[in-house]
Image (tube, rainbow, N blue to C red; front, side):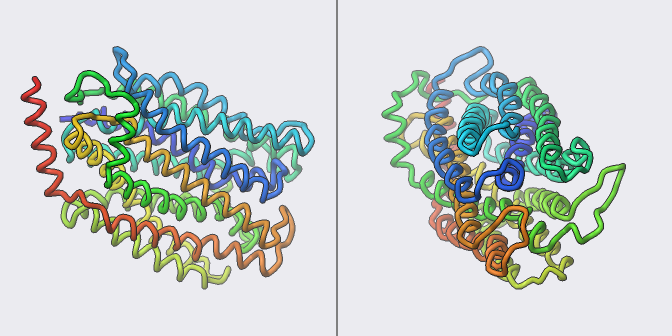
Length: 462
């Protein structure tokens, strides 16, 4: 039985990762175009190149972690070793150098690539940790729920407070130099919190599940086994599609409120000396709704199964996203209500995905006798990055296609494109995700048999 303290400690890890991941997803595009000063098409291409290349490193990191042996385990050490570089490089990514356009492009490529690299070093072992903290599928469901709940809490904090912190350090000055300083300092505050949370995750968690085969298989064997793992391929496709959905919506939100809603024309909400903008409130409310989805995922999936829960949530999200396109900027109440409903659906699927990845690990071990936890769980991070790569690249390219000009009044065509980023385009991702998950073969009954057979094997080996 895993104690509450350890569940919370595990949750802290994704709380830290998600604070930065949401900054990347919601603010990095507009930072590069409106603060850093890069054309949208160049940013889109950079996201695609760096994230696809970085995605391919995830299985490598998973294989390295599987072959790591320390007194702290296979996966926990990387969370500790990567914590401080994670914070430092994160701040550098949101720093604007005094360089010409070519120099800025090179700087952006280098810092963003390094950031994605250190994210891999920390997050792939962190994701894999779920597979070795407990052999019990119900414990894993609980850990996945804690993970995603804390992830959304972290995202909520980051999205709600980030722009107020930026405005605090910039002195609410619209001057670009003041804004650049504000963005760097704002990320610095978030980075310090993240480093502390990663250290706590390392300190509070433990690795318990040992592989049946004590001798680690060769990487070639791991890859061959992975290629034969049909459930893994299905989850990879479903995960990529779901992240395309998320990345397009998140990446377009600030553009939507800045240029379509024109949030400057609305009075900001002030609380405790902080002034909250509409886009920040919209994103933060989405995170609260995500938490509701996470909480609902376990009881609903325990009743009707993970697969059916996933299918229902994504189908509803598809319909709601299409309807979203038709809202005018005067219909703020409906815009926020639909954000809540769509976010509940989106929040419910991710703990299911993490739990299903753990099931894939058990399935693979039963079929092959080899437990490649890190390699299999690295696919979760890989699907995230592929999804964000595709979604972010599309956002950048289509912004350029629709004639977007930073810090200018946008044309009707551009505004229509921005509305599509919040509705029709992400709906394509949800539909694809439904198609993939409909083919997922590991039901709850089948997993009970797999876990029982593995337990018998472990007892025999012991």
